[in-house]
Image 1 (cartoon, rainbow, N blue to C red):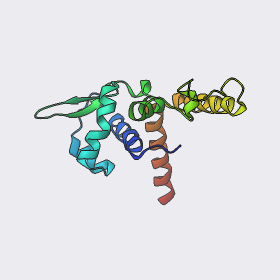
Image 2: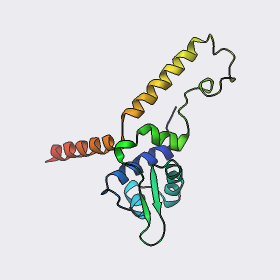
Image 3: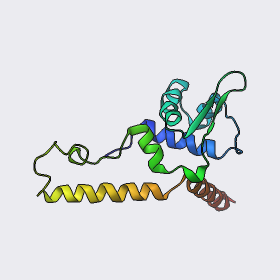
Image 4: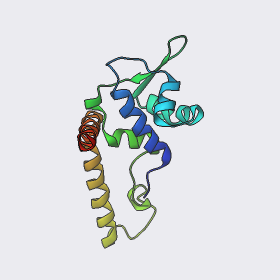
Length: 146
């Protein structure tokens, strides 16, 4: 499983929004410039985040985007699921009629456990955690060069 480019940019955009002052409306052009994404692609990736209640949009003069929730309340899993739908490692975990072997297939148990563990890991990391980690890493890099 590979996370799509849209999801990768969505995570980056949400982190960027979380780094702004609380309730600050961020212009689309500023997100595009800092995250190196085209306006059309940004619009595409923000729509699912808006629908999921993670990001809000403000129209008109002075309009832009802002987080709809506190960064502590948004997890990596929330963003991934907003962009890609339910986390699924195998079709048999989504559709119980997909494979008649589910009741005895040993691999089915492994897929289930792996999917569950992956979801748990993604739930553990909030956007606030990611902002903090990025700040720490940038500070560390800054100290390495001075």
